[in-house]
Length: 240
Image (cartoon, rainbow, N blue to C red; front, side, top):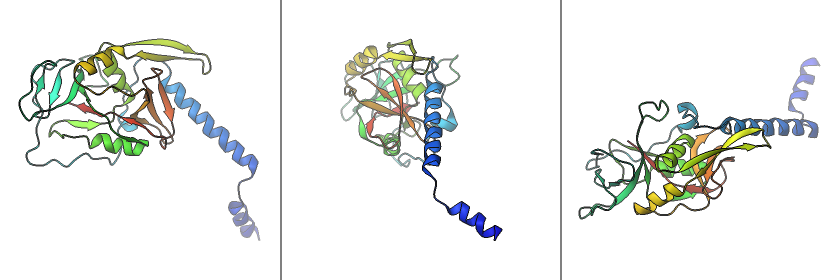
């Protein structure tokens, strides 16, 4: 009799009070995630949290170009041949601009140890999972470079590397300091490189938790945590 009673207790549906308690737990977890990113300063790239699992870009094939960057500088463009050019240079016939160098690795930067180039065009937007796949499949692929969705810390370094500024402000609702970015410097440099303007909508980052993913709004200049089922824009970054 005792064993049957236990089985019945386990299979009994959750009461409305139980559902409310679970709702409080989820809401609290979401607030904690906002507090983590809202403490101010450059956020750290955590390989476990930022790197998507089981996501592969295009298979490496014969004839794929390799990156061969000579004295790379922020603002230069990367061609489909894997070489870097000044913004005003005329590229060889058959070579197209594909990305703009936006960040160069610094010796004292222990988080992002590689250079970053932002794609000149958007990929197809959508939910977070499709965004990760779209960025990883950005073309053309390079044998010694990786296309991916930028993490929150990579977005910040791209903005600052291109002359934009970040200011700290007090979020009284959560009682924390948050960063707000003025991205005019980045937008100006991207336009000069021939890049498509960033939409005023939000762009995904690859930084995520088990229930949410971070994104950046070019309208407000801030990062937000949203459900991964939401649909936002996608701009890939090339790590070299």
